[in-house]
Length: 329
Image (cartoon, rainbow, N blue to C red; front, side, top):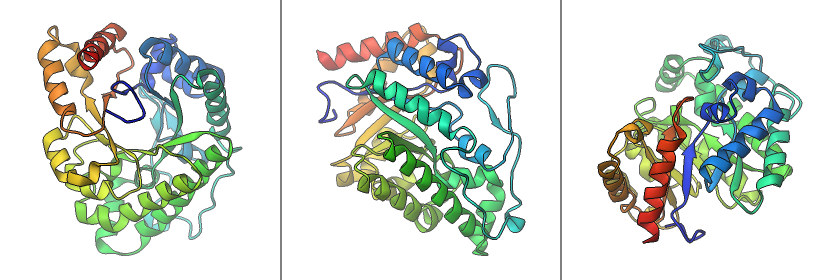
């Protein structure tokens, strides 16, 4: 268990689901500081998580501030970008960073983060979402072009990644200047999107740079969220400077722990469970398997994959309570 807690720390992934908790659409909550604050407070009141994230469509905020359009596939779906903003080969030579925090929705999340922090201080850890450089680059163009450019070493993707890293740094610096912690999401950096060789060469230095900035700013807990099966890059993730890493449900916990080896000594590993597993009528086998996974890590944290909008809270509470009972016995 984490040395900072006297219990197994707990972090469900509620993004569009937090909108359901207040009976509003994800789009409504994502565009209102008042609704965002209400939704995060309701999320904490419902699940009493040890960490909460002020954010919903976490990969859209920076791209929208640059001019990308956001659409909603259906009323209760998480908003997404309508399409790429740049043609990778024809993007501006020196793209300008958006004005932070006045551009787009930055100010909304800054305000919501400060209000939630004030309300929940001392009861949970509050972080505000930031898009990592690889995912933002992919969102601004497309995955195939980014990967091909990196493999061809033509410089286009590297130039874009330098820009998206600067943007991520600027946003987290703004958050830190206002006394808020950042949580960095960069799931497009995971295999098989990036091979381990591509990750080490192109993404690892960027993640190290961002985590180093957070460390220099005084942020003690630094979570880097990369979903999927990240076992092939686990040893590299341990070198990013993050203090909390994700072992998603797509990864084998034993293999992930083995890959980390002694590198996990100072790391908290958040092990996620698939939300679909919590819908099964008999929870005991699921609980036992998850407990075995948590036991692989020296400092585990319990988490979930992204909860669907209409996920039944009682199922998650049933799981949380059973897991708490097991670890407090």
